[in-house]
Structures are given as C-alpha cells and as structure tokens.
Image (cartoon, rainbow, N blue to C red; front, side, top):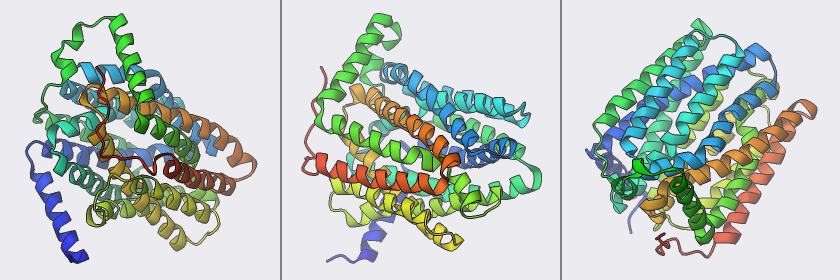
Length: 420
C-alpha cells in the first residue's frame, strides 16, 4: 500500500512534468505572471474605492460593475471563442487590459475606477473561458488534473507574495505602483502566449470569421440547447447559481469584514487575502494525492459545505488568528473544488461547444452574484456585516448539499452527448 508520502512525491513529479511541457508551459507562466499583477491590482483597487467613499456599498458596487460586462458579453464571447482563433483572443485580451490598467496610474476619481473595472471584466469575459477551452487541446487526459492543479497551486503561491507586496506598496507609496506593475504583467503574459502552439479547433477550421449575424444567433441557441439537454451541465448550472448567490456578497465585502468585525486597517485586508492564498496553495494536492478518481460529486460539492460552515464561523469569532485559520480552510476548499470543477468540465464538454458552455457558466454565476451583491449592499449597512456572512455561509452549505442530491449518482466518466 502506498504511503501518503509516496503519493505526494508522485503528485509533485506530475506537477513538474506538466510545468515543463512545451505545449503547456507558456500558458502556465503567462497566467502565473498575470496572477501576481491581478492580486496587486485587486487589493489596490478595493482599498482605493473604500478609502475614497468610506462605504461598504461602494465596494459592492465596484464588484457589480465588474459583473455587468460578463452578462452583456457572455453570449457573444462564447460564440467567438468557438469560431475564431483562440490564441489571438488570448493575446488581444491581455493587451487591451494592459492599457486599461495603466490609465489608473493617473486616477480621475471613483468613476474612473469603476470604468476600468468594467473594461477589465469585458476582457476577462473573453480571456478566462478561452483558457478553459484551450487546456484540453494542449494537455492529455492524464495531464489534465495536474495541469489545472499546478496552475492553481503556483498561482496561489504568487498570490501570497503579491498580497504581502501590496500591503507594503499601498502603505508606503499608494496604489499607483500596483496598477503600473499589473499593466506590465499583462504585456508579459501576451508575449508568452505568442509562443503557445494551439491546434485549430473545429469552428475555426469551418471559417467562423465569415459567419453573419443569423449564424451567430443560431450558434448561440445551439449552445443553450446543449446545456439544457446535457444532464450534468443543466444541473450544475442550478447549483452554481445558488453557490454564487451565497458567495457574491461575502467575497466582495471581505474588506468590510476586516475593518468592522476584525478591526483591521484597510491595508490589513492583504493579510486575509494571503491566508486564503496559503489554503489555496495546498488545496489542489488533496484530490491529486487522495482521490482514486476525482470525477465524483463529493469532490465537487463537499468543499461548498465546508466553506459555508467557515463563512458562518468567521462571523462569530473576532481574533485575527482564528479568522486567518478559517480563511485558510476557505482557500483550501475553494481551490480543491475549482481544480476538480475545471478538470471535470474539460473532460466532459466537447470542443465544439466548450467556449459557449464555459461562458454560460460565467454568465449564470455573474447574474446570481449581481443579485447577491444587491442584497448584501442593503444588509451590510442595515443589519451589519456579520449577518451577511451568516446568511451567505448557510446558503453555500445548502448549495453543496443540493449538488450532492442532484448529481450524487451521476457517472462523470460517461461520454457526453456531442452536438451535431
């Protein structure tokens, strides 16, 4: 019987192998560099808006501004990802976002922060689902869980470092340096993706650029039909909507929890992000080392239950060490769930509709998140931040139980129905 040490050694070797793979390494390194800049940017932008306005609702509105472009562009983005060069989409999204972020070095007020946040979200609406669509084309089935895991683990390691750097930058010289550095990381990511070899996919070969509006609408409807008829995707959409409704407000208002419940300075918010990052660094090791087959409903949905309980507990306890421990578990479960989620979908969804399914999941998540923010913005100033975390944690645990009820007996290894 293999010991846990042997299993971890095997996992780390698989990590090293996929990280050295010439077909995957440029994408992984590009994401790694970009994650560093994104963490700096996120902390700096939240602190900037909160310091300008002093209101939790203003922070919630910032996140809402990031959601609207996803809702508007998601249906378009899905078709574009399935019909055009995915490599060109990745590079273009990086360069556009670099220009937007650089403008914040000369901030013009809170409206400017909101405008840039909306522009970045528009770029993310194309970039993030494209990455998910590309990974199955540049990895083997055996590499897939390791590829997603190494991206998450190393990304969280970078998040920890960036969170510490962000606190120092904000305290010493303000937010400008963080924004400038983030712009540079987008450019570096684009240069690395230039080296990436991505095979042409079915829609691109068929001449997606020549398709008119009628055909675009038909393609969008085909993606919706696939999602509605596929047992896994249709039920997963329901669970994801409930989970997003639970976490939208709590995730956006963590900075408010830090100040009003934990009594930290605004820059102390970086410590909370760092604790989440430590947990997220370790989380992907769990399914790689312990799961005989990660394609199981328990690996998908039990992390929701555990994180939900943690959100309730963090609203109860005020000592910083306890909060950091709970956020460590938060990161542990989030990353475990995400690497299994991404790997399972990449295994299950056919390439012809992969862009549309991933963008549909993004749109569903974002719509429920927007509703959660609207409710949370009212509750945080009316009844307090603790009530927001109590409610959100309870609902998230319920989402995990719902997922187990709907998909607990689903065979994740069965072949999905491919669209014609």
